[in-house]
Image 1 (cartoon, helix red, strand yellow):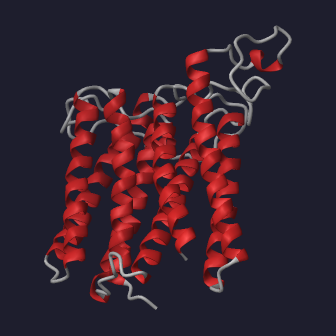
Image 2: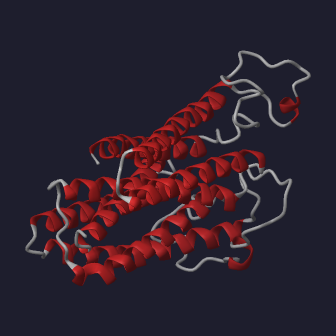
Length: 326
């Protein structure tokens, strides 16, 4: 349906903006710029000043720059949620395809849950498992939106599926590997472990530093802990960082193989997808190394998150080309 396709296109772009903004907010330490939710110190917009009796002041003093970063992110995310609500409404109102009704309704439920994760990110003081889940939720939403765009376009003769079922198993495997690696990246970022190894290719001057994997991968540590800045000791953060590095090697090999297989296809649209995947993969690895070499510059770190989302979309596109149109 053309109206759903057009909204899905806009929503996909907006979802990418939300993901990049979310990374910018997190990496600039503005995740708790507004200690309450959904407003900011009890108001819809960031207040110029806060009364001394405002209970949120006891949680965190007002910092206008950080508060505005957080609120802009919420405004854009809310707009995305509204667009998805419209998609679901149109699907139920006009389309005769029951699958689209179920799909858009499920997407709407996911967006609502994503909003709850956003609330818990603030109220649970940047608890790493919630921050990571919030990241994965955002990536799931953009993937489903992009999938809607691809399948709807293909039905209209635009970027038609190559129907290469031979690549399906390895494409699914690559998608799972990438999601696991992104999860590791989210865990690394939310535990402030990105600079646990300040050198590359070694870590702290050695190939295998002292690491505490058990401490580094405890998912739940109770309530009432402020995680801003991280709470783990050095060896636990090092373990997380090294796990992400090892995962990067596995991910690179897997996605490189899949991209080359796609490039070797006789179908032009599949070759194009493989080329884009390969370019994004090399770019992502380069950004990861640059993060370490240049000690996590904000622009590079944010770009690393954005390219991860694009790389995920390239694999979703590859999956689209593996499944024939029904």
